[in-house]
Image (tube, rainbow, N blue to C red; front, top):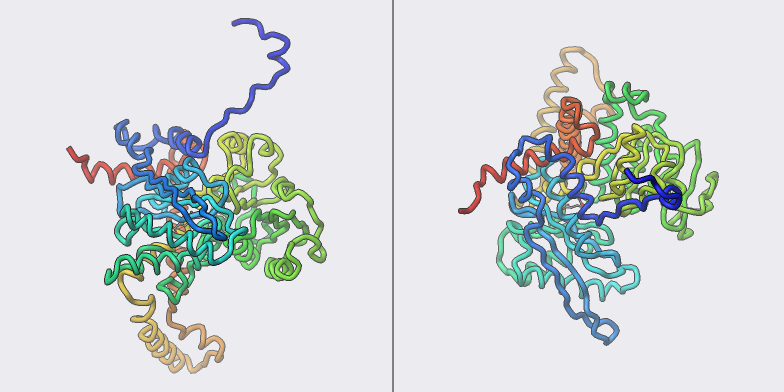
Amino acid sequence: MAKASKSSKTTKAAPAHYSFFQSVERNFDKAASFTDIKDKGILEQIKACNSIYSMKFPVKIDNKVEVIEAYRVQHSHHKLPVKGGIRFSMDVNQDEVMALAALMTYKCAIVNVPFGGAKGGIKINPKSLSEYDLEKITRRYTAELVKKNFIGPGIDVPAPDYGTGPREMSWIVDTYMSLRPGEIDAAGCVTGKPVTQGGVRGRTEATGLGVYFGVREMCNDADVMKKMNMTVGMADKKVVVQGLGNVGYHAAKYFMEGGASVIALAEYEGAIYNPKGLDVEAVMAFRKKTGSILNFPGAKNLKKSAEALELACDILVPAALENVINGENAPRIKARIVAEAANGPLTPDADEILNKKGTVVIPDMYINAGGVTVSYFEWLKNLSHVRYGRMEKRYSENMNSSILGSIESLTGKKVTAAEKKIILHGPDEVDLVHSGLEDTMIGSYHEIRDVWMKNKKVNDMRSAAFVSAINKVGVSYMELGIFP
Ligand code: GLU
């Protein structure tokens, strides 16, 4: 081997750069050889994006014509409809939407939601546009999707993502219905709608609550906790959450209510830290009042939001955007568990560094799958045209009442009025949605854990999640058969 020259000794090799989609492909390749799918062609087919719709359309803003750049990518048609959110951000580009669509395919497979993966994006800054302009853009985008058959309850079902929420979903369903009049299942063309527009109770908090259920399941896993030299359970776990959007806020809230201590919260204006724990609701109310989380009483300000990622804690929850933990800051991450509430918050370099350090990374495609899980419940509600709990609530309450009555007369003792209220309560829609979500997050944790623990070569949870997902998607493709 040639002797290294002086200069090559001192110049560090530049870290490899991967686009977001290439990172997803890399993680896929790392896991592929451990799957049951031996046919290279099937693996290539699973990996590829099936349809990419890139569009440019004009919208009049302040009497000027603006050309809007937007995308919808359907990653995998092995199951229909395909499913995934729509984001509004100036960072939207084709590669990003492809990567996010691919993650949706694996995510749906992991939580056994019978959809293929998709994603959409509009390159706009929603904060700089009026509500009226946002409505025009959203409606025009929906019309473009209708024109090309890229939306429909059996075709492709969007949902909220970064920069969008129930309001945008409401515009989408209204536009769809006006272009496809009389379609009986039309409400199922999009999820994350307001409840008054066919949405389901429990969708708003679903992703954050799912993050909590998934992390709690790992913290209750005595074997894993022993290996990591951590105590079992949520109590006393120190949590840092980056991003206080819908996902981050709800995750932080449920961690706090579950007995963990949320020691730091980070937003783009900076971060706040209190080793004794922060009251998440009080921080949110403070931010609403002052416009910032900084200077929250009793907490220390961290000027740079990214500093919060490097605090000593048990659980770090990046809940904003991709690539926030990379080769540069990963060596300084002290958390024992990183729960990827955002999609793609770790670059492949960061992943490697953290895995070497023994940090457990709970991958996005599992830990943030609560959103799409409850979207699935919403879609089912739309197809069945009935609210969850409508048929059984009263029946359960009557049944509970007669069981309680029998117990009271047999024992001669009576429960208190408060206890009675809890015992008699029949399930509401939100109870059923939360319970379906909890069951899904627990079940999928154990599916991934089985792969992770049984195969010695699969040494990180992301690869285990990929193995689980690829096996399911692969079987689907093989059973479908390939059109000759
Ligand atoms: N945007 C969410 C995600 O990335 C939800 C997708 C959906 O509900 O279809 O998982």
